[in-house]
Amino acid sequence: MNIIEVDKLAKYFTYKKGKPFRKKKVLSKAVDGVSFSIKQGEIFSLLGPNGAGKTTTIKMLATLLLPLSGRASVKGFDIVKNDHDVRRVLTAVLPGERTLFWKLNVRENLHYFGSLYGLKRSYVNEKYNELLKFFGIEDKRDTLVEKLSTGERQKVVLSRALLPDPEVVLLDEPTLGLDPVAAISLRQMIKKIAGKGKTILLTTHYMYEADELSSRVAIINKGKIVCLDHPSKLKQSLAAKKIVRITTNTWNDSINGRFIEKFNADAVDMHRRNEEFHVNFKCGRSLSMNDITDFLSENGVKASNMSLDEPSLEDVFIEKTGKSIEEEEVGSAG
Amino acid sequence: MQARYWLRPTFSVMLKEIRIVTRYRTWLLSTFIWPVLYPLTFYFIGLGLSGRTGQGLGNFERLANTSDFASFLILGNLVWMFININLWVGGMSLQRERLRGMFDTTWTLPVNKLSLVMGATFASLLLNFLPMVVSIAFYAALGVFKITGNIFNILATIFLIMPFLVGFLTLFAALTIRLRQANLTVQVVRSVLSIVCGLQFPLAILPKKISAISGYIPLTHFVDIIRGIIIHKHPLSYYTGSIVYIIVSGIVMMITGILAFRYFINNVRKRGLVAGY
Ligand SMILES: Nc1ncnc2c1ncn2[C@@H]1O[C@H](COP(=O)(O)OP(=O)(O)OP(=O)(O)O)[C@@H](O)[C@H]1O
Ligand SMILES: [Mg+2]
Image (tube, rainbow over all chains, first blue to last red; front, side, top):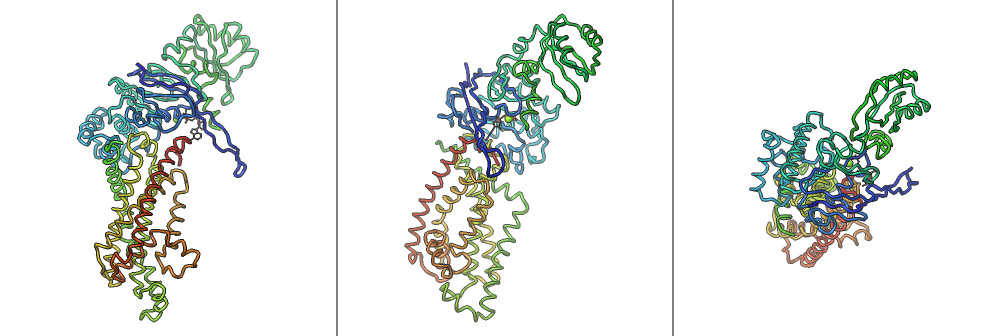
């Protein structure tokens, strides 16, 4: 059964750009007709670079934003018409550190939100103890939130989100700003939450996060979903291939042409960074490391780095969007 | 909407605001120091103009209809302080949530959004009570201000102005969702009210064109009644017209505030401004 249904959902923003008094209105198609559905108990990831439209999608589902067109429902409740019912079924964790009151302690925060969820005080009392234990922070009960570490704070935020025992949890970049160790422990927690039968929709721009956590991934770019499947299936589309990565400062079109011809390769991506070329090719599986080193020495190419890998989700992303995720981010930052 | 989505939440919001405000040390300043210091300037200005023996009081007496300039000014200033704190705590409640980064998250909860403003407004009314008491006690102890008059009538008048005040703060909170310059708006609103309602001087000195507006603002009537009860010992029945006006305009203001609030919530959901600063 699908608990979330999203059908051709779109949201455009207009904003003003340019010099003061000579500003022009610009239309930005933040979300441009996305469709997907999520089964009960599934972890579903929206993966995409900055500005792809992940947060905008989450905000529409969380009833913070009205869609321009299209429809979406959560447990059969329409996000526009039955927004109050939607808010009772799902909880959202939005990015940013300040989604708790820093001048209140953990217990006071959870009681406050419990009340705003419409929960009984006695229920909250029992539930928050259980949750703090679940996250291993029961000793922080009376600590002011301003005195917690970022990782602990994120666990309190998740406790807050799980307080009403929601069927759906939306997580917008849950590991943003956490150190690697805290991020790993948080990902464990997310898996455990899903183990309790909750449906989770999360956004991320870390490939490995989507890969590790989710049963299905939608790669989203410029407001559109470019592909959607199980992470291993997505990688399978490249399974017959291996990925060659070469970093060098001597590369040109003719060497490129020869490489493609000799190994029957597909150029996936080539870009320059810090005076060096980073070239990626998709090749047949029979190719060996020796073949490549031979080719490089024949052509007088000195490689500073070279690898032959199994395709990763990143390669799938490049294959589908024609760009690497970091490149997208550099491009959209300007 | 079921009561559990607004009744206890309103109370929780109130409790939360009181907790947070009192956890900052500046709270002591605004509760115990400011209410004593603020009216003092006005008292000394009054003293300067009237002279120590009151030889300059003739004009004031003619304009304000009383020679008790200290009570006149202190009462006006108390009302001004009351409005001022309420604007900051109640009217700015949503703006503050926004700056705290709590706006989006709170918006995704099933709670009735109006409880957020109401809770904060009630918190500010409660928090406001103490500074008023401190101020009155201080000036009474100095002998500057004589607490006389019917306490019941005073409380009844304060009660009657509540719908107007709550409605006004709701309207103001709704506006802050859209207007980013909320601080500036507070400055303008409180200055205009102070002048137009004659909080710190006799209304009679205002140019005709401005004092023509004064009568339309319930606050003018409110301060007039409070001064009347305390300084002239008038009974409430003396002010029937004003009281009816305060009640009617209070109801109108409540409805306006709630409608404006609804309108801005929907508007904001369309434009995606909820999160902005
Ligand atoms: N309120 C708004 N007004 C105008 N434009 C907006 C607004 N919110 C988002 N946008 C634009 O919509 C596009 C999508 O933004 P969104 O926040 O959904 O991206 P994202 O995928 O969450 O990115 P990130 O990884 O950086 O969080 C961006 O180009 C952004 O500038
Ligand atoms: Mg985002």
